[in-house]
Image (cartoon, rainbow, N blue to C red):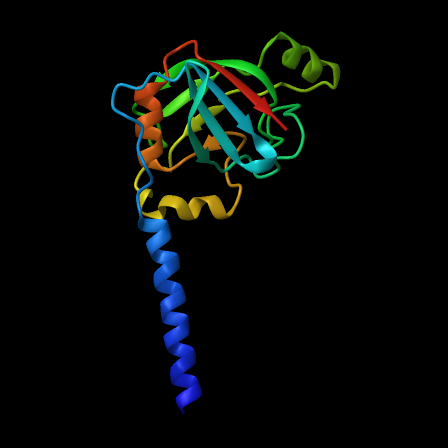
Length: 173
């Protein structure tokens, strides 16, 4: 009976540590921070925010559910790769706020047309679906978007405030 009790204690401690990690808030950006460059490393699931040439914060992200490779056409569930800009800000989207990415560019449209497809669009950096903020960091366990880059709602709040329209975003493999 004692080994079973010890096993339950160990499991409870492990669950407590995991829950603590996912509930513990990360260090926030200072309130007046202005991000002037975003860089995404898809293979690492990281979004890096820079100000004045200095890395100021790294975010862990979820991507499209088929993330390897450049987005080729609408519905391929891939996150595009290339240099784009933030071209929209929406505080009232179906996901907790979003920053629009200027995909597709002319080259993306031409590549999709060459295979007889539409390039798609509506690529965003966004929070979680509205009403699901309780998921928090657990969303990082899988790639679940349709090609967007997802962060927690708290992280989306700070990015929304710190990133201006026209900010470059470089999305790398």
